[in-house]
Every structure is written in C-alpha cells, then in structure tokens.
Image (cartoon, rainbow, N blue to C red; front, top):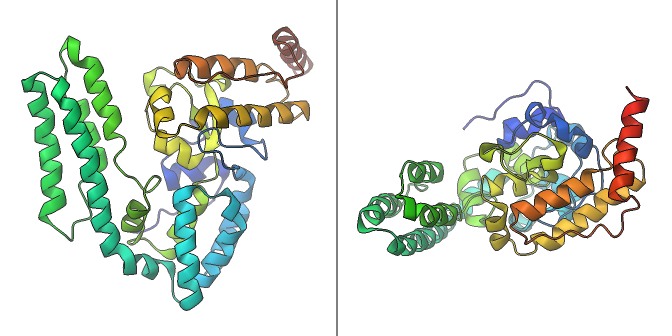
Length: 342
C-alpha cells in the first residue's frame, strides 16, 4: 500500500491524513487545548506529545534509512508510548541490535505468520461473546446476527493467508439490523461488544499483521502518531455532540480513535483507570490555566466536569479543589477576556 502524501505537514492535517481523525476544521473550538503542554491523556494516562513537535519529527523521519535509525528516532518518545506501541518498540529494539542495517518492515514480516494466527483467535473470542449476547434476543433477531458472525468465522478459518475479515464491514452490518422496541438495548450491548474486536491500537498481533505491508516510514510514523495530541468529542458528534470546547478533551490520537463512537460509560469498562486519568488531566489543565495558558476559557474545568459526569453516567466525578476560580469567578474571567479583545 502506498503512503498518503501531504505536501505540507501541519498539526492541523496530520491526524486526518495519517490516522483518520477529524482535522482542526471540525474541532476549531478546541484549538486552545491543542496548545497546552505536559498534559496527561485522560483515556490512557500517558503524557501527550505536543502537536508542535510534528514538523521536527517529520524532518528526522525523512533521514531514517535503517532499522537502527528508526529505533534511535523512536527512543526519544519511549516514555510517551502506549502499551501496544511500547511492545512493538521493544521488538524493534531487539531486531535492530541483530540487524541494524535492515528495516522494520522486514522485522514485521518475519513474525507475521504467528501473529496472524493469534489475531484470528482474538477475533474468534469476541465473536463468541457477541453470539452469547444474542441469547437475550428473539430467535429471529439472534439468527440475523449469528449469520453475520458465522460468515466472519468462515473468512477467518477458510484462508490461512487471509489477514482477516474486515472489522469495519462487520460493525457496519450490525447497524443495518433494525431491532424490535424491546431489543434496542440488547442490540446496543452487542454493538458495543463488537467494538472489542482487535485493532492495531489494542492488539500487538493486529499491529504486526496490518503494518507488515507498510514501509518503515509508515511504521515509525504510526508509533509516533498514537501519542500525539488530538481533540476528542466527549459526546460524539454522531450522537449530537457539539463542536464546543465544553465538549472537548485533549487526548492521545490512539485513545481518541480507539473509542470510536463508543459511549464513555462503555469505554470505561475497557479502561477502568479512565476516571483516575481524567482527574490527572483536569489537574494538568488547571495548572496550565493558572500559568495563563488558557485565557478566555477559565470556565472549561466546570463545563467539562459536568459533561464527563453526564456522558459517563456518573462514573467520572472530577474534583476541582485545586482550582483557584469559583464558577462565578471563572465566568467573570471569561467576560473580562472577551471585553479586552472585543
């Protein structure tokens, strides 16, 4: 597969082209959040790589020729890596020690066969969980879903050389099923369970299988991008979420993409430490506001606290004890800022 080519790499188009995350045009109200530094990802707990580092990274990436070059570049971002990316980096380090003049694509191709087998087993386990949930449906509805999971299994088993069935196609097919009124909640549970199908964000095996067909440049870029800053809708836009800073979080790109349109209350089940990470995130944002780096948005902590509580169904309860502004004072600070620049 050929790389997507961008003539001018910018923080605004980077995630859109390379990671399929909305560019700044759709999240322009979140621009003040993008400028913050030393912020903890509220989904994954790692420190987010600031967007301003993207251009410098791309310049160094263009000079990478060997596996050793790639490992040395990525080593600068090791502390920012998420679990899947960190596991891949460890594999690349070992490979580069023995094959310093080789490239990382060959590393992935060497281990792809075993990883593909493990990936298929991971997929089967999720399909089993989906089928188990269909027991709560009427026979007619259950049969429709099991026909789809059976087709997926046939693809997985029939061709050892085939990477796998298309996850997006399966998820889309579930959306086509129109449930009876008393089955809507159950079908929603099934759709959420299907989102657990492995991706390159959640599974080392899925990463190896997907990127064994990509160039070393794309592989290195993918490791880096996962931890770069991205604006995330707390309430997804597809569910009516507003394009307003009070509905935005600054997250890692991987945390954003992996959530997809999953309800926040469901995402917490996958990552139980999210409430803890959210508090650290808010404390980081408060520090930045106190340092004068989010002027005109002093009400953000109060807005996002309310939004997170609602979207998580009460599972996220943020403390603003460290914040120097009362809610009334925050409103006054915003009004004063707007008056100065009116």
